[in-house]
Length: 259
Image 1 (cartoon, helix red, strand yellow):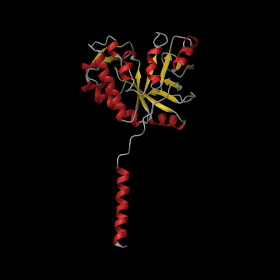
Image 2 (cartoon, rainbow, N blue to C red):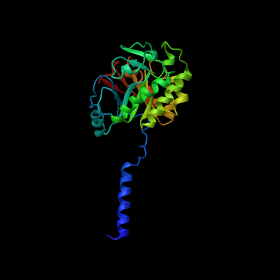
Image 3 (tube, rainbow, N blue to C red):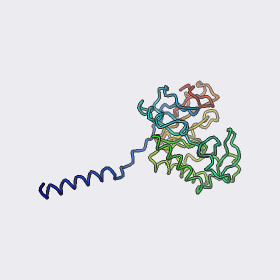
Image 4 (tube, rainbow, N blue to C red):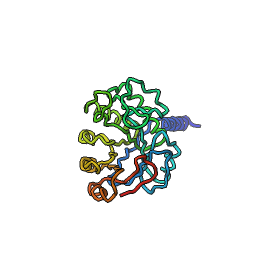
């Protein structure tokens, strides 16, 4: 082989190797649009039969294959993780020191977390987000990110919650995951630019749905459920506001009544 051809061949090999190992640009972050239909199933392994484009399911209870199956059907998949409370039934429960576990939050086996302790909670939450990413989820729903509004056993203030929620959103984005703001209505004005969608429970029952309008105006979905109201009592209003609404049972099994 002539020297010039040998050099060219070597350059092609080097370029090919670099192409295999060079970091790829992050995928474009998914931002669901207002009015996008969804299913929310946290009770057990996912049942894929709901005819909707978005599924929100438990990150621990479902496998990468469960996520891949939903993807094959053209669905986007949201990873539910509890970001604001310790749960005694999770496999990482022993990683949370007693010092960050507060008062019970009303759910069996759960205690509020001290969200002031970013030094302790950041790496624990990052590991949960890594799990969501490894399983192929598109987004994450961090639950209970409004502890400052409750009796947690810690002197939490709004500023502590803002710092914690922004940390969660930043960590999700660093992993290519979209992230939804769960409830926490008072801090929507400060956080609507940081989060990619919202998840809300019972805004109609409490007369608060209009407070979610900043997300809709920003072109971001509000995934909303009611438990105690009949659809006739809320669907017309939430459709007018641009929310993605349905009625569910509190256990969040497969039963659903969409608006």
